[in-house]
Length: 238
Image (cartoon, rainbow, N blue to C red):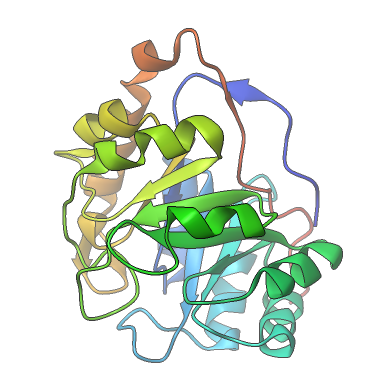
């Protein structure tokens, strides 16, 4: 694993989450995605096994970040998948402790902590964590995650002025530019908004979404964004 790149850019990074097929993951990166997410949460329709995730990550170029999404998992569980699958980052999407995040960072794992505008943990819990970024969404659906629900993305704007913000929840090719202009995030995270079915990505939608994000560069002319996602580096051996 490598450190986060220091280069800056003038539009948000893009993470496409919930990948289940290696060729779709590789295509997402070729279209301009900076990070790919694999979900280790059995209740999710996008849940993958360690072997499935390893295949997805193995299809990525070294320049892409490979992010594992976990919900209230323990340190050993997370590290086993980091090492088995070649993950460069862990996204903590439950009520994980600051101590867990710090321990993962000590092991060289990048960490993204999820916060919820209408739930816990919320913005007030951020000061206790030392992480690479915070994914912010609402908390109104039945599962952890955005549940395809649009929300008041501008509610995260002030937080994003203070912390590296990954905007998520209800994003699609048709509304992502509006969401970016409302919140000015460092990155966006999308899953169901670019799918044909759970875990299967519609690459035409992915291309449209990335083009829309790149079209927001005028909003960042005076605010270069430091890259948030850590690239994968060396891929796991076959």
